[in-house]
Length: 141
Length: 142
Image (cartoon, rainbow over all chains, first blue to last red; front, side, top):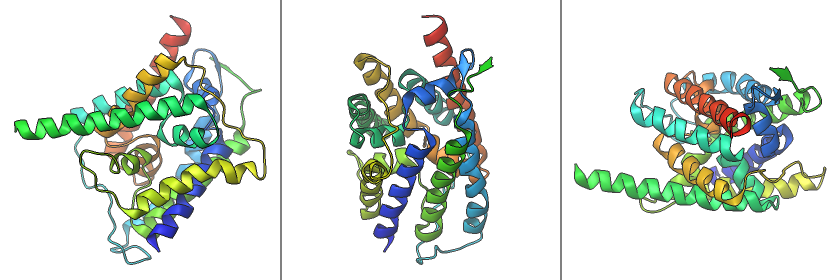
């Protein structure tokens, strides 16, 4: 059942990316270009998502178990550390260079965009590189 | 700053955003999980694979979205204006950065801010600032 829910959720998420304009890198870059002709749309994407998310997550936080009886696996870390900041900045630079973040890049592949496929392949490679780097850090300790 | 009113699509943005928020809420309420794309994808990859069926199902659903959308309307996805070497560099930065920073626009930006997580607020401010700065340099200096 959790698998079926996850598939439906993935579909709704992807439709949200398409409807909102997040899957169009020009729209994303138009939002990130404060000094140019600024397209504020993406602020409203975030606003719409959080307007639904706030009450939903408030409900979720009060529960010990999910509606399907699963353990609530919410992030426990509160550390405001260097990996959080450096990683987020690196992500932001890549986002600004291509106009893709992970979800829209994946959706772009099946929408038939070659640029999304190239970006996604590099993104997966970057994730694997991180895993290898982290494993190496681990063996050093 | 001038607002580009011809490109501004407030209704679609709010509606699509609400769908994204709905997806995140459904996943946490039913499965107890965070809908963070970089986390879901990253944990399926080697070397420390902890693949679970729900993650694969989520990605299949996500990848099916353009086909379902295409049944009702013309595809709004467009190609990135970046050249392929820039796409490769950007992809590597996004892949490595989201794993190092434990999240992306979905995990930190949508789920984290909805959970009122200070960590996600810091992450979101960092990637937004870096995105604004990158576009500023790329479009107005280079």
